Amino acid sequence: MVPNKVRYASVDILRGMTVAAMLLVNDPGDWGHVWWPLEHAEWNGCTPTDFVFPLFLFIVGVSVSLAIVPRIEAGAEHAPIRHAALRRAARIVGLGLLLNLVAWLTIPEAHLRLPGVLQRIGLCFAAAALLAVEARPRTRDFVGVVLLVGYGVLLLAGGSLDPWINIVSRVDTAVFGSFVYVTDAPSGRGHDPEGLLATLPALATTLLGMRAGAWLRAGDTRRLLIAAVACAVAGWLLQPLWPFNKNLWTPSYVLWTGGWSFAVLALFHVLIDQRGWRLPGRAFGVNAIAAYAGSGLMVYLLIGLGIAAPLYRVAFASWMTPLFGPYVPSAAWGVVFVTVWWLVVRWMDKRGIYLKV
View 1 (cartoon, rainbow, N blue to C red):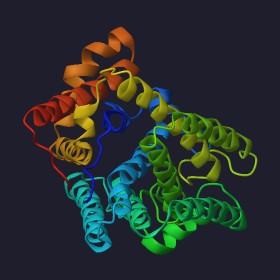
View 2: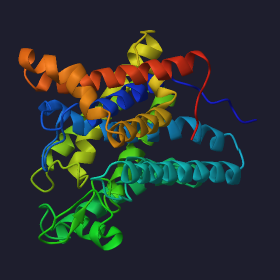
View 3: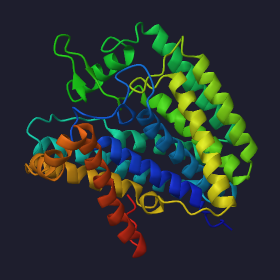
View 4: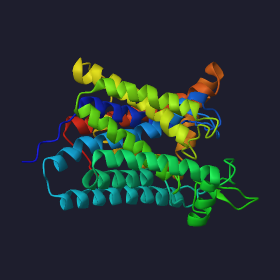
């Protein structure tokens, strides 16, 4: 008999808060005036914003461990689970490509981009799901270590880690050409923060989440906390070799953000699952991909139709800037945007509407 999937409120809420943070940092009113905590590090470094995407991938791994592994352990047939996971991954990747296409068609200054956030999520989910079905826990842990060490060696062997000339950017250029996030005009090289090669260490982040999910199922908060400290310290100590860098998803960045992800998961598990705290975020968490994709589509249409700029100017910048300066209205736009989408997903949740990609 295949057991019913146990649903941890802490995971739904943490996923939801992470999606809300993704919307907040992706949608300022004015990209020229963004507070530093809401910006990614320009290259090396790790701001609060740089924790958001790895935390989401970490939660993807936790969710795979909670949803798929128990079914395999109970003796469920592998093929249906494997096929369902691959179909879902393909839909996530396809949705990401569709959003990129819509951006290209609606925003005059946009160019067609092939990689993206949803594409990376889909690939990491597919690989994690296949490992959940076909590999034992120790094998999955071993794969994560090999990915991290092998990728780190590859970065060093590739020469400089500076922009454009690093091996990650060179691979992006070779594979995608100009269909990447940004291209350096003088050299013709491209780079994408969600490019192909750096998806390998992103998978290592997802596998850390799978290990966390196993400990969560076992109720082993102590190991979550030990892993939090061990990973964060290891990541900090590895900076001389590999600086924190989200664009390259360096090994130090994997361990540093992974350590904090273990800690946050342990905290949420204790407060929500064990002590019964009621925290916001569930509505975003149970419609995570729908909220992310829907909000992205909304932004592209607002910009493409010429609505976003005048709406921001009239409703926010015109009266807030003289009073508070340019950073407050820019942040206020993002907060209102998140609130609008919270109302949407809350309405969906109350009516039992869950869009599963």
